[in-house]
Amino acid sequence: MTLTRSTAEVAAGGSAGRPGTGRAVVFLVLVAAAALVPLLGPSLALHGTGEAAAPGVGGVALLRGVLFAALCVPLGELSVDRLARRLPDAPVERPRSWAVFAAIAGCAAALGLASVVSTGNLVPHALADVDVGGLYRSRDGRLALLEVNSFLLAGLSARSRRPAAQAWPLAAVAVAEALRAHPAPEHDPLTGSVLTLVHLTCAALWVGGLLHTLRVLRRRRGGAAGAALLGLYARVAAVLLAAVTATGVWSSLRRMPAGTILDQLTTTAYGRTLLAKVVLVAVVCVLALWARVRLRRAADPLTACVPARAEVAVLGTVVAVSGVLTALPLPIRWT
Image (cartoon, rainbow, N blue to C red; front, side):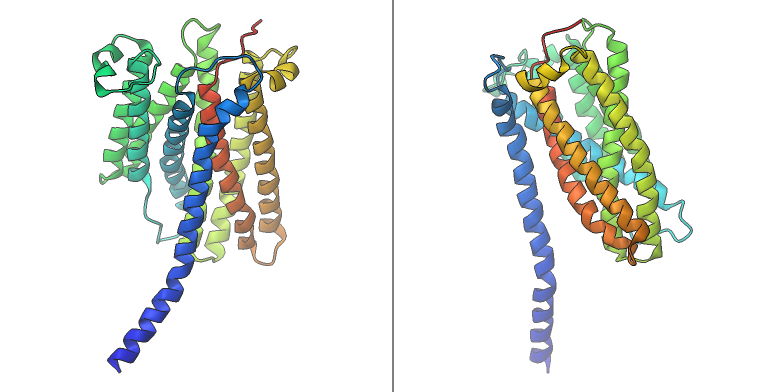
């Protein structure tokens, strides 16, 4: 009897484990595909433009993509958990937080970027090439150190009794990125930094929020509360999308004036990458609309999770493309 029971349990465990294994394989494939975007994207975008990229542009783009993803995950968890608490039948069981893993990845990416900054935006070939003290003597170096320390503090906060406290160091990372993207010599850098801060924060809440919402629904396995949570997130996401679109268009017009933007979208690496990002966001909007229609009209509102999962995958690609965008040379024609 013991042998029979054990055999049955093993068989049941094996059949139950296959879906989990399948999801893990799909996840690894998606991560590998997303990693290829920053590694191969810069060379494709620069081809035929006559522009020169900084050394190690592919590696920098990959690190930027990891940093952005590490910002999305914990911010999404915090925002969705707060939304869930507003529901009458709030989900009690929630998935295991990925905030600590995101903080580790973000800290590692920020360290890599800081090492590049310490060598004058050159790729260090040995540990001796990294000038840690030099980071304190430059604006970009101090911002890089701020990001490293902020991710470290966010990870510690995520493990504490008050994980919501990680919102403050994560906000510091977003501010540092906004300031880094708009150096002092730039025309009206404060406006650019504010636009980038709003754009980055809303995008992180959108991407990370959808990911965590789907994880909560899978943990709860349906129900009216799950549909209510997805509907509540959809309303918030609509506002976030509007903010992302408005700030993205404004920022693009600041770097590519309206009279030259159509030409630069095809003749510059920055413009080509921006165009690819716009196309991907358009695909995301179609998937989001599809999910919203299913949420309102389908007999089972949770069938909206099907297009929502596809939306998450495309959003992951958008994050990777955003990493490429920040590593490429900016358009040289200004007004």
